[in-house]
Length: 167
Image (tube, rainbow, N blue to C red):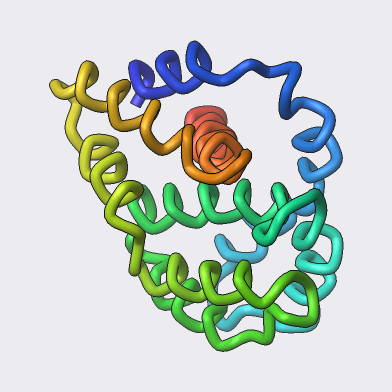
């Protein structure tokens, strides 16, 4: 995973996302804590976290939502034991917090239904000896939408760094 982190860092300019990521840091950490808890998710806590995390930024999928998509993508890959919780989260009403398009995408990602472009990158994340292909696919994902791909990659980076710190 460390090589993947280096490639993500190299392809993302921190000054483009640092301010937003700083704003989202606390709710992202609280989301991590809530999903790591044993037992059933506290829906009230999750709703509070979502009110601080989702719907922030421009576009039909706000930038904070794109970051969240990257975060839950890595969670599905690295922590299969929480997939049941992620499936439970897919039943929540995201329209309360963000756009309809983004709500649909969040539910799809929580179910593990990733777009084709993203799926290629995810498959390469799980393979250590395909770094060149990973970087190539990363560049393709980065170009999705006006900024959606870039912010999705920021979410991947944040979550991978989170796991690196907590492992």
